[in-house]
Amino acid sequence: MPRLGRPPRVHLWHIGCQMNDADHEQLAESFAEIGFIPDVPLEDADIAVLISCAVRSNAEQKVYGKFKELIPWKRERAGRAIALTGCMAVEHGSALLQRMADLDYMFDVREPEGFFARLQSLYGGDVDGPVAMPASDRLLAYVPVMGGCNEMCTYCIVPFVRGRESSRATAEIVSDVQRLVDRGVREVTLLGQNVNSYRDPESGAGLPELLGAVDEVSGLRRLRFLTSHPRNAVPQLFEAMRDLPSVCEQLHLPVQAGDDELLHRMRRVYSVAEYREKIATAVATVPDLALTTDIIVGFSGETEAEFEGTVQLLRDIRYDVVHIQAYSVRPGTAAARRPDDVPLVEKKRRLNHLLDLQRGIARERNQTLLGRDVEVLVEGLADNGRPYGRTRQGKVAWLPAGSAHAGELRHGRVVAATHWQLEIDTVTAAA
Ligand code: SAH
Ligand code: SF4
Image (cartoon, rainbow, N blue to C red; front, side, top):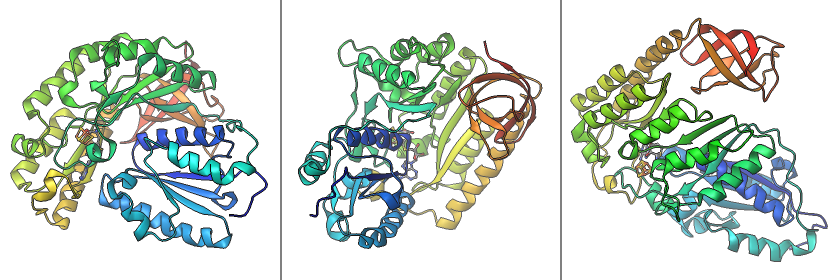
């Protein structure tokens, strides 16, 4: 291996859920600690790290596509290397190293020590001690509060690739948030695959108490959390959302389907009636609550009547945002033993039907905001000079040109609304 004579430079790329986004940040910090320069553009890099996703087959295809793009990059200059981590590394293990001849390293993102030790022994002569993390104007950050998932939804690969649930200590999370806020972050999203089963390892305190502790970090303006499982969505959580000033009025509560038999086959452990009850309690507790969910269409054996249950649920609950996916068989899961018997064209028809329905509902819901005052955290200026950001409910909002800068909180009146964004006028600074 030729000496570089300078610190190695690393390009990091990720796809998939917010956990991968958080892992990207964490890996960048670890590279800086061992004296590598993280987050450089690909053309300047010596090492490319792919943080992969295995939740659906099309995510995996995108990772393979990205890997193919890297092969000419690697061959262009001797000494370049490609590493792969994330959920595909656990799912496929060393089989990937055999299948992908140009892949140099593979590691489990939960245990990266061996990978870093190997890099340190290879590049030790090129580094001069820890490097400062590049200055960041990041306003929003994700903070993992627990890893893994103990649910065993039959379609899902997450428990296989992320392991059993394990929560981090509240004090550690609070100090992470404080450090991010000191660096300029204003909004934090606490992450877990099943975040509302969070338990502080020592005190046993749950998510409502954790939200209370993080809410006290001075300088933090907004706090969100993802992803809640309906079984653990308890009234105390909704009360914390209502009572804690920084916690935003947004609840992501994936339902997946609107039929009891289908939910049973998915092993979601709640009935449609129980889910509706939780939503009713949340809406009654938290004023101006935005609701979002995830839906899978075309799961094994999904009949037209079962699908109609999902349609009806969307009509009744009237979510703000719905993430809809076509069912994708994941090898090794319980559902992989059942037939994938809804034809692709039918999956697509059901998906498009829900998308159309939801577009109308979202537009109507957003239009009820016309004339109302909302709070926007300005995230940046678009090319046309207009500031944009999000409301506490997570809706994209556009402000008049020249009315605000990134990082500011602004109040304004909603003057126009489409299914996915708001126009704001007569802007004032937030108290
Ligand atoms: N822990 C979260 C999210 C898990 S994965 C939860 O319980 O909701 C994110 C979303 O991907 C899921 O909500 C589900 O809608 C979708 N998903 C997971 N596995 C899938 C599969 N095999 N096919 C299609 N969509 C899937
Ligand atoms: Fe997957 Fe279910 Fe766990 Fe969510 S709760 S990560 S869908 S197993």
